[in-house]
Image 1 (cartoon, one colour):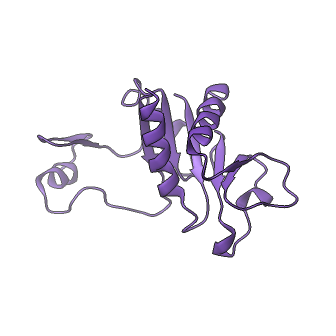
Image 2 (image 1 turned 90 degrees about the vertical axis):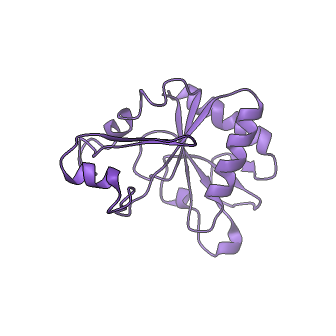
Length: 170
C-alpha cells in the first residue's frame, strides 16, 4: 500500500491540507484512501447501540451496513507498542484498490512523513528534531533545515510530490 503521513502540531493545518490533497489527487484520477491516526483512546462505536452490544458480547468483528455508509469495527491484533507498522497491514484488503493512502498523524511510522508547519502557531518544526521528516509544507520560510519546503499554496505540486514520495517508498 502506497502510504504517506501528514504530520504537524495542533492547528498547523493538517486536516485542511489532507482534504485539499484528496480533492486534488481525486481530480487527477487517483483513488485516495485516508486513515486518521490518533494516540487518544477512543470508542469509535456508540455504547449501547446494537453494534456495540455485539462487540461487548464477544464478536470478533462487527460490521454496520446502511444506505449511506458502511463501517467495520475490530480490535487491533497488536498493542500500540508492538509491531507498529504491521498495524497498518490490517487495512491492506480494505485499501487494496487505492492508489495512495494518506494518514493524518503518527510520528512513529517508518513511512514517509510530510510536516505541515505555520510559523504563526509559535512552535518550531517537528523536522528540527525528527530527521525522518521528508519535507515541509508551509507558507513560511525556515532557516537551517536541509529538506524540501513545498509551498502551501501550490496544492497541485504538493499533491504530485506526495504521490511521488509515497510511490518511491512503497
